Image (cartoon, rainbow, N blue to C red; front, side):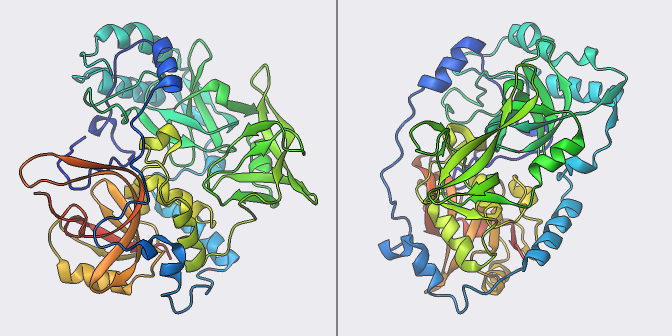
Length: 469
């Protein structure tokens, strides 16, 4: 990952594996313990006051009250369904699980798996212990799990549901994978988390049955098989995940319980998760949770959500008020590369905000930049007047600003400053060195952030502006 850009934002991005996949070297068992016990530096105490920010600007109402008609419906439910269909057809990386061919050529799949393995294993890589990774880790531990030679000539796809949020990985290993020994929070084999109830197509399986190679709506890679429950047919999968009656998690996360008295905690899904609804009672919602059986098959269990939880029965109306409120519910939430540490990177933040209001937003910043109306594309450090005009024409709360590897949500203009809310890890603060100030959370700032470094402010490095409309 090239760190020679301003705010040191590590934004998850799908692309050619050779552009960003790196790996660490320590054994599988020690990695599992590290994930459970690892002590990370605490978040800087918030709320952070950055750039020209005043405390009152750290509330959603401040920005909402400046809008002429924040409750105007930007899209009706039918218009939103049409918009989501447009996203599906125009975003190249978007895969409609329910339109995939049920049979796939095994030869091309074998070549793909081999390419992905070689791309990573041929690199000069480091482990969390600071030492160079040995070829034996790849050849003796990972390659036998990839097992590309076992792919048949014709693949009959299988189908499944994520029973919890689960990591999609570049290779079938939980070994932490770092670009450099001091990048402990940036596992470069971490693509993303897919949410509870995400539908997937299963393309391949490791010989030991512990890993699936899957295609999810916006990402392809390796997941732990224990987190996927298989359905017998794609039709069964579609029926389970596309019901008309559902809750949407509209808080940062909410608790789910085994019992209606809320005494036995079960799970905590994140913003944007869709939960099939069984019934509504006086004090609780009854929802369906997917379970993985002893043979990997799916079954359903009733679980319980408090009626006081931050959820919506169906999607929230698509208005500026709702989008901005959803964004500010995440203010101060931990930054997490690819969803690591239950956090969100820059595009994970915008993904969850728009998902909670029903927009089928892609997960990657580059893909997100092509959603909706294009307001402008700019060479870095050029096009100042064009950027200003684009921002002034865009709807606050619906306008996205993309840098190379970073995404921000536009809030509005005041006294000639343009304000954004975004999830970022750090900013550079020196004209002569790589000194950084750790942020590691969702913050509000104006676009002069990073302007005291040799790389220049956020505004100068914006390369595209689009309105999600």
